[in-house]
Length: 473
Image (tube, rainbow, N blue to C red; front, side, top):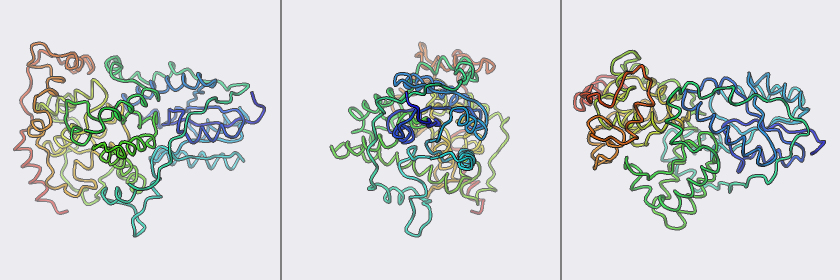
């Protein structure tokens, strides 16, 4: 135990011990370290699946802290009130945290930092959720990047520090402040019966993340570029949910990719490019926050998307009953696992925004509620890129044909069979679990006949192209 004043480490979306700059800096101060997680509006506003996944991550992270001789203090309320109150209660001399970049978190953090400094308390934020700070990456003209490819070329050779090890021990406080009980928060309550289905497919925590990354580096990164779009194959890294909650740092992934590239692994550079695509999404969110809420291309404000969430097409899409097999399979994968193959996400989003002519915000909100790997920047960029309102060089004619996409990336129908029970004599458990995960009020059964397409591929494409051709952009 130490008699020095403690340092509070405000834990947010950084549920790891290694490569955690705020935690490392707090330990280096020499006094007690008090990790604190705050349930504020940024937590309460999460959708059902990401909030459930956060609960799983917090549980594992709290145990990891206990194994280091520490504990996780849980508090609820506005950060502007709770953090200063904890400082007063503990006599803390400083508050450290890992930086966030979405507008709501930036506003909150700026307010808290100002209040702490006015009170004479050291307040420091640290990098680590990204490889490169958004304000440190500029074009030659001094502005921000609006196109991905030149940003990739600008950062691909930049030095990224090696990830740091977890502290061997966390100095404990002689007296700990009161803490709420995680179970009392019921963060996963909105998932209802779907939680039990998701739990079969989720392995939360830093150790699980590092193990999965190791498997990817050892067995799949070489073929990553050629196989990553195959819907039925386990060909991707599976790191998105861990990155979302900070259970692993992007720097760790970057250096795994660099080592694989040095070893001649063919897919390594493409893996690094995908990490920079994530950086690009945060870069745009930071410089143009409207990415989260409005058309990134402001001239698209008058595009005639339909916005009524009660439309039968919206209901059919949400219930994975569009009659377009690959679209429905992908949505069912999401309801069962909390994730969706990236190629499938593009097909699903294109069908909603182009064949159905439904506004991308309806899809964005639905994903926000259903994905365990939900990320504000990546979700928004993905939807706007596919819809055509985002930073895409070819939005006009990019209309994914779900039937040809399925034939190309699921030629043996293995993906369809895994997730669609209708029409199969003995459907696999993955397909049956969809009916266990979705609300009973939907009244769905695996014995139901599979629906006819609510919008055909040709008619949908022609309607979308006609809408684009008759608008002035």
